[in-house]
Image 1 (cartoon, rainbow, N blue to C red):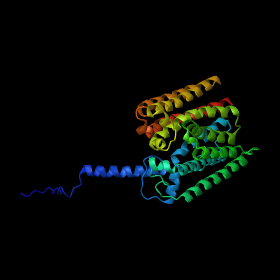
Image 2 (cartoon, helix red, strand yellow):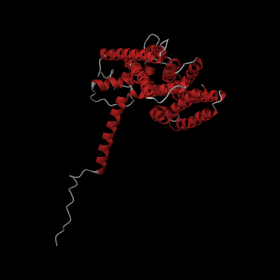
Image 3 (cartoon, one colour):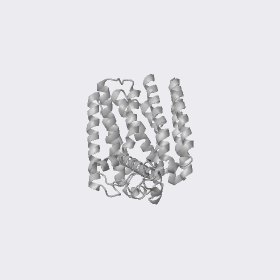
Image 4 (cartoon, one colour):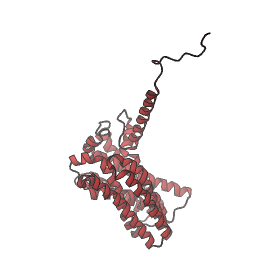
Length: 344
């Protein structure tokens, strides 16, 4: 009798499952690296990039999110935002101002002045890798700043402001970005001043813009958000851990360089938690007790992720920690904004 079973292919012709898995993993790693590259995250790819990909990478889209959220919080705190098409479009324009334009300007400017540090810490960045020229970077900085100012004045015209408050906030943000990155002040050389300027730019300024656009920006809210920005200082410190080696070589006094990795990690998490709890106490004092309790409940998972990831290995787990814990911080900002809007 003849065997009717199909012949098995020779071993040399079949692809081992382990090889297929390895190929798939490599492909997934490359795709993930490309995504990180476009978002401006650590661990980017170094392959061919178009000029527009390079410009987007300089603007670090991953950093736009807190600024966009800050506008949402300001609008909520105004107590006057309504879900009409007009308000939605105006809010979107303010988000464009705070996120892609002003933050894109800030990040591009920072990369320009940090090109020597990035050559050590992140040599794949567009400028140190030589993928984009310095004149092209300068042009990008000027265009982003110019469009930002035009849009800010346009928003003031829509709101009917006698004093151009949104434009003034944008000018302040542009000035802070410059002295943060550029000599002779270069605030980022000082871990405390630089990170607080960053925290205020991420929390207070977009909040002020959103609230001024839809309502009245009072001094109490300005003081409260500047206090809240001390929690933002802690978030800013998280970003310093990826640059420890370059900062140390170039004499920048970041928190991790000054205090060491372990102590800096504790400084970071305590700043984040303590000042949020301080905001909760303020909400209790203005009789917004439900919002205060919600804010406290949002701090609890942050503490959990701090223990799980950040305090154990801040150098390796900084991105993982931010992805897991930062959503609770931004939700807490919105809870605070809603409380202020409700109390108004």
